[in-house]
Image 1 (cartoon, rainbow, N blue to C red):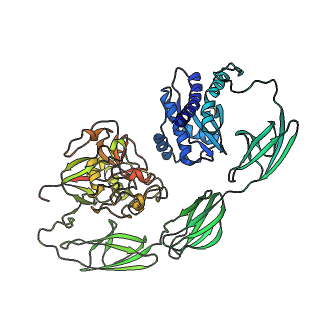
Image 2 (tube, rainbow, N blue to C red):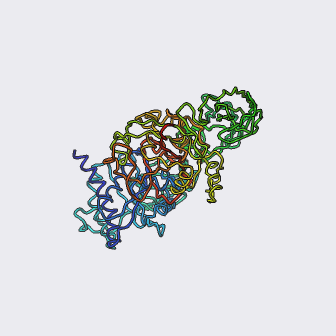
Image 3 (cartoon, rainbow, N blue to C red):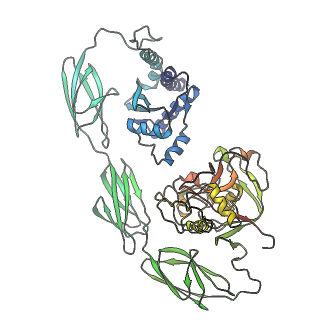
Length: 634
């Protein structure tokens, strides 16, 4: 218990030191502050994260600052495509602070050498880019760290007032006062040069360099990016120069290269290294940095991918190669049926359709007085697939477009899936606070689009109404989900075709497909790549709809690809008092978004995860799908 109390006291004292500077410098206006992840040596990632979080918590508890919490930091920086991890330089910290719109940002470094800790904390002024204050705390073991914290605080406070520390400053004299301390020197060089020099945890410069040091045993650490830290003991003698030369060992990593499909030839950094197989092609002993990996395979387009090699890690890359287009020859009995591939009209049977992208496609044939015919076909690169269809005469009273009583074609040509009336569990007790509590909801039956609304569909709407077509962000249009549309744009489209946006409850029920798990397929994100385009597999852009597996209702892309607008206003506490039957949300300044997207993490793609944005804005993260109530007698 004593050690625990001392541990907490030690950290709190350090944080009190940091906050004391800001209190003194900005009394009337609360500064906005963010805390970056501390870097370090000899500590685990979780220990360093705990130090960063303790700094953040300590600053919050003073109630003197406007703090940016870690989750908001991650969301803002993720949208700006800024990587928090590995941001260790002052320039990087300033850039982070500018993106977060804060005045000051706290950075730090912790070095553990044997049983001794060296903790350096910096407060960087984002406007000037300079370190406003830097303090170091060193201790042998956690107990001594606690004992020295109060005296260190006294030294820092008086130093900030421009006073020279004396034995009377603070309750404990931190250092003995002497007229002169005997010193020696050390000439330090390294191979390669330009390594940072730390003596007893204090940065003194870069190699090669002569430094003046107090006599006695001193701990030397040399640090250089891409090399293993080098430690050595120095015995400094008065009026003597110690010469030391150290060879740094480069950090090395490995890459495990796979491809889908296997059998691709691989070039790494311009050199041919072999072919992929089911186990992968492993390349070891690589210096750290970014490299280009090139893949080539017959009937597939060449692919280049960047990979960043990390120390001791085996970085795995597993790209999906894009097969070259093929052809399909379609005949029917009787002939003259209209051909639709992925909802796009191609002509009438018999017909050979060329330049069809490899992979799975939806093929539909339609002819007056005959039932609609549909089939999923697979196109192989540089090959011709043959399809023959025998059309079945339609019985009296047949309504073209209704398939098996479960699907219907809307006025915009989109397939819609029937979601039956009934009860389901909405929300998650294990999710974020706005997903709680999990509760039962009853919904009347409704139809929802099988796919997200595509550019092809939305462009036709724009042409019919004179609206400006939204940007595709350079990724292509066609069968990709429409993006850069506001909530108002989505409502206008839905209303034009006699439909509407789904409520948040309708969206979640359709997404779950009858499940009560984190995703429609279970609780583990390991299968998510089979159902969704998200941060780990999207390649930084949207993809044509319907390429991944559907859920239990036969609906595609409910996880990932693009966030989808819902009709509801967002309310973080709505679940606590929402109605049991057909809830429709409450008022606020934001509309609900659901489903995650191509640039978000797996946790954001969960069935119960809730997003929100102002209704007037669009982005390349957002799209939508439509819903409609069940018409009596259909």
